[in-house]
Image 1 (spheres, rainbow, N blue to C red):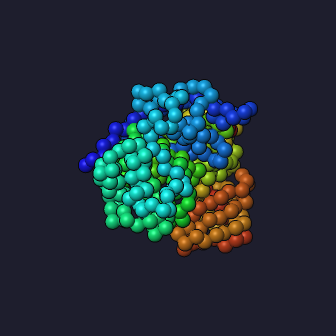
Image 2: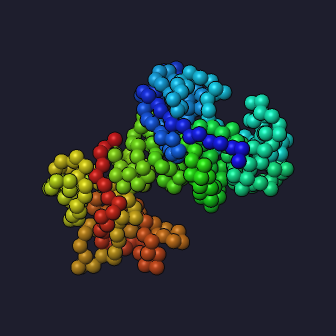
Image 3: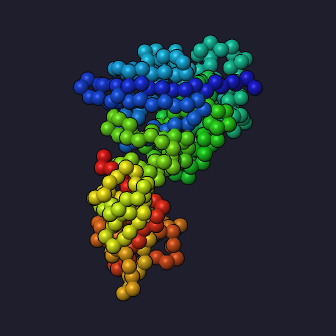
Length: 357
């Protein structure tokens, strides 16, 4: 094997980036351990792409420090950083064959043609396109073109692989397939990777850790499970899990547990430093339980305003005594008609007390 990888760590230390009078990144600090895939996730304009571009050397911070491994790269140009970038547009040369595209960076950096050819072939083999070297990009599907772009980045043997919205040009089914391939490949070679997306499901599927950004700062950092099950704020709960946010009251606390009241409903949840009084409760759509209301029913009351059949699930919009609720129900064979009065309960999983961001 002619390709060898040395995974590097990444560190941002109090990084600030301003454009004229606009602060794009505001005192951001984080560390990425070698061999991890970390996703920068957030809505448009949150600062995630600027962060990636500073790591790549395409932008430079106004202040702060950026480290790759033990090397301070804060003011180094892109050409002097041991990183490779995969762009959302693929950026393949249409007049070159697939093999020539993959070898382009090697040739441009002065690698001998024979060595470049060998590494190009190995890179294509890594992404499952060993037989496609003599084809042109126009002869490939979108997913195959993206894999060529990944191979071109990998043959440069970077310490850190950067992926900027790599699946945004693919349809939904292909996105799922290619994201699995990228994750499997990253784990196979143990490469450090920084992945940028605005797609929450994509981030949950591929990441060791997720850094959620909002308004130029880090809103929360953690594992996919931590962010989904223990959001730090109502913004995280809504952005990561499309959660319903309802007013609730902590009526008692006992060690690490809080007794929470939502109307007539009661539930016990991790206290998470909250005290008695009014709070917000994040309720994931799949944690809402609906049933046709009867005289014997308990729980909250509501009315089905919209019902949408999506094959493996029903989605409901429900007007309830605690506000509008979005509900995902996998019991498609027991669909509830629009206009029905329903009783509403919550499962314990998928509930979290959250702070107002």
